[in-house]
Amino acid sequence: MWTGLFILAVVSGSLLGANPPARTPPRAPRPAPELVRIRFWTAPDHTRLVFDLTGAPPVEPKFRLSGPSTYEVVLPRMKKSLAVTSEFVGDSLVAEIFPSADESGVIVRVGLKQATTPLAFVLAAADGVPDRIVVDVPAPPNALADTVLQQQVSEIKRSKRLIVAIDPGHGGDDTGALGYRRLPEADIVLAIAKKLKAELEQIPGVSAVLTRTGDYFVPLQRRVELARKYQADVMISIHCNASRNHEATGTEVYFLSLTGATDEASRTLAESENAADLIGGISPQAGDDLLGILFDLRQNDTIRRSSELAENLVDALREEDRLKIERGVKQAGFVVLKAPDIPAVLVETAFITNPREAAMLKDGQFQSKVAERLADGVQTYMKTHARSASTN
Ligand SMILES: [Zn+2]
Image (tube, rainbow, N blue to C red; front, side, top):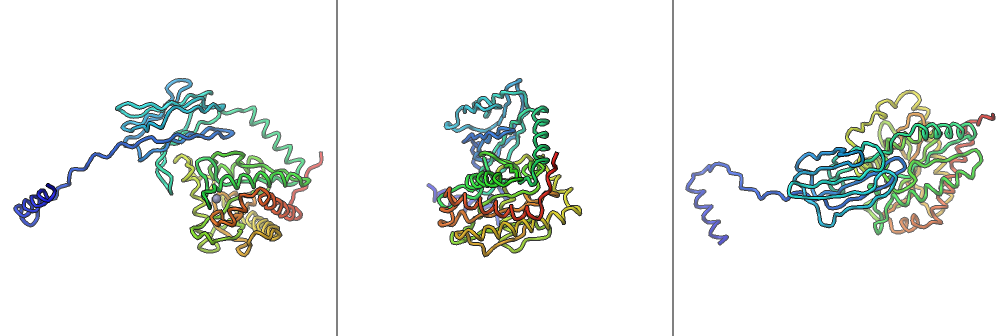
């Protein structure tokens, strides 16, 4: 049968002459993309819902408040996997998520607990993550809480000589690098960051604050904003390095370069860390306005201090025998280091893709050692750069 059809096609082609009119073969209708998974994360100031899709929505989705406590995501000409059922969220902002489907498409209703306007957007597939719909449900503005926070920050600023913002990379839908046996970078760096905060707060005159306290996504620029909101004197971003070559090892501390990276590997590393916003997802409206206003004269002094902090941290990390420090201090264009007025460094603690280093990174005692060494480095930096706390 198949052969017969083929011969017929050849014969009819030859009857039409040398240049048969081009004909697009009838294409099989593409299957409607499906909603295959719903995930959510609770952050202190918002709840994020992510809907994983098998393809881009064929028609622009509609996002609307359909009542005081219901937000709807309408996905025409899409299907819903049977595995997707209603989800109980039950945090302070979202009660439940109800997906439903009929022949016209899929509707996901989100039950809201507070008066707020969610921000939703479509994200194209990137770097191993599928096409997605992201719905961010923000906590309503709370002027009183903001005032109280500002008072607390001012009080800390008066009584402490150094405020350190610790930034655990990744989180939520951005797991960071998946290491040996799929160990997620986001979990390891949060554990080290929490231990570092505890270590730093043992030092008289030092206060530490985390840009992320749990498993949720924080856009890169927001991390810088948080450091500024807490009036941090320095910022330390914690990451794990990753490589396709599972033999790759070593520890590096980076500070910002505005002109280029130390070497090709540093440039690629910064690119992959900067892709966090692509993976975790920020709305297309969220521009990089901060990056535009940054680079004035203050930046030179900030970068000089950043390089000193990086040297101090590397020197302290050398005391930990299990770390390989040949790589040492380097420079590259990490977005999270682009604070105009806060000296900032990014620590690539070790390679999560190397079986030996992954085992170390997972070990709570090793995490504590790294935290102790980093705190030592901060103490050295503090000797030359701490403010004098006002005594009133
Ligand atoms: Zn990272």
